[in-house]
Figure 1: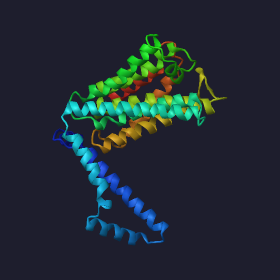
Figure 2: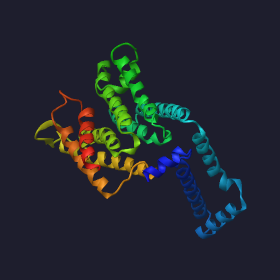
Figure 3: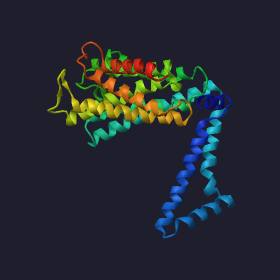
Figure 4: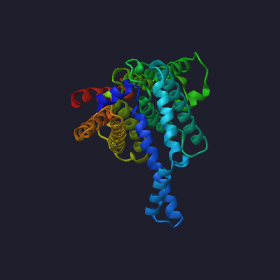
Length: 317
């Protein structure tokens, strides 16, 4: 399946075309059924009406799929560097809007700033990886993608080291309000994202799972640990809890499995039952490493990602 997808991409086609068309048609059918129930019309009659509309060639029935096809084909018609540059630009803008949306919700009091930071931690890397199918089949595409977190890392370094004055960024990213914090966890986060893109890209489950264990596992461990961790500290590390470790395992496994299924749907990786078993083992191992009192020596973003990479290299064969 992966080879087939890569051949199609090399030929100028994109798996996004088929996926978009199918999604659009399913959405149209769902709308027709909902309208039929609301108006007291039987679903079978609605289906018949939809079929007649399709046969009649009305624009309302076919305009959306044709529009999606046109956009996808236009992207496929671009040469690889142009397509990758456009994908990188779109991903950068999307990531910026994504983070700003969480900031706005935090300011409105929808959730605390601490929870906002962790939600950004969980979703930003996952969102970033989810945009990889937008890039071309060129061997250089991964470097266009890797440039995005590297550029963000350079920005964090400049702010954290005092080269750039940006109080809003410090407030949004740091826990205690010190700009030096940007030179630790947030900077390491971008390094891991870039390394996973450059070293493994979208055809290996190793990089995908390492990325999601750092994002989903570590993020959910903090959220669940803060909410339910009081009274159940770990014997080997009183700063961590059983609740947090369980949150890591469940969150890491769910996010990783979802991303693996996503890339399997595009044909970039092959996912079978054993893949999910291996992912569960990696989630447990990463949760154990994250729970150890090692933060004075190595950041969780590095220790978790390296553990996932080491085990993934052995288990995903």
